[in-house]
Length: 179
Image 1: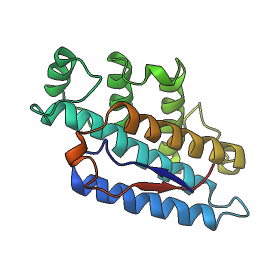
Image 2 (image 1 turned 90 degrees about the vertical axis):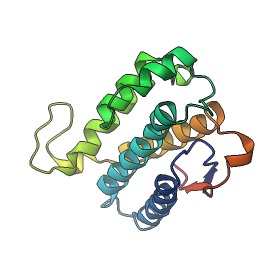
Image 3 (image 1 turned 45 degrees about the vertical axis):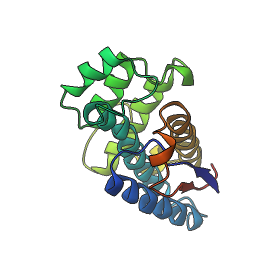
Image 4 (image 1 turned 135 degrees about the horizontal axis):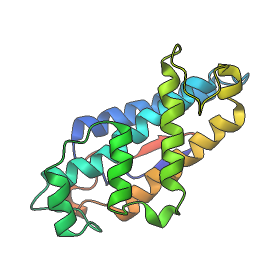
């Protein structure tokens, strides 16, 4: 199990839901010996990362006095005025303001790849970037990749965008399964 501090979360209920969904993710992984739950693991990782990344935007938009470390005041003010609610848009805003660049140049493409697989929750949708055969799309390797990406991104958010120490621990840590 990997423990990630929740010090980057600004909205308690979202944080509470992230803790709950991390627990669901651990349960899915614990019962995925045959790989039949790979799709649900990847979808769950996508949901967790969308909520977590969205918290950085939420804080930039709403925490005017507290601010967000490592986001320039001018960038924070620009983000404040944007409506951002879809994972695609969140990733693009993160890219525009170079918020995840320290994770490497490919991080935004990796997040977009995860988004495409997460969107496969719609069974009937045909996405040219994701195999139509779900057994081929949601392999053990894809599952492990998504878990690793989740731990990497969440760990980075806690290091790069922590809240002030006096309010940083009002949501318990996230406990993720090992990749």
